[in-house]
Image: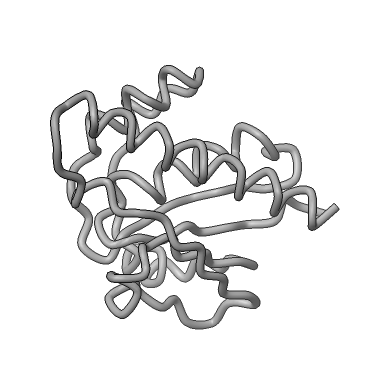
Length: 142
C-alpha cells in the first residue's frame, strides 16, 4: 500500500500549511506524503523559515503553491486539512472530491503585531502547536 496523501491548505501557503507539511513529512513520512497549498499563494514567511530551521527542518527552498494547481492536475488526497484560524475560516478554501476534510485552527502569523522578538516567539508557539497536532493525529491513525 502506498503512502497516505495529505494536503494542508491555508490562505497564502506562506506559514501554517508549510509548517504542517514539513512536520508531517518529518515525523510520519514513512506513512504519509504531505503537500501544502494556498488559496492566494504569497511568499514564504522568513520568520517561519527561521523557526523551522531552529527545529532542524529547512523549508527555505519551498515554494508557495496554489490549491487550484493541485485541483487542475487531478491530484487526489485522502485527507485535506485546512489550518486557517477561526477568523479566516470562511475564506479557507474547500477542496472537492476528497475522502476526509479536517479543520485545525492555528493563529495566522501574518496578522501578528509587536516587536520582531514578540513575533518570533509567537511563531515558535504556532510551530510547536502544529507539531503537537501532527504528532497526535499520526498516533491516532496507527
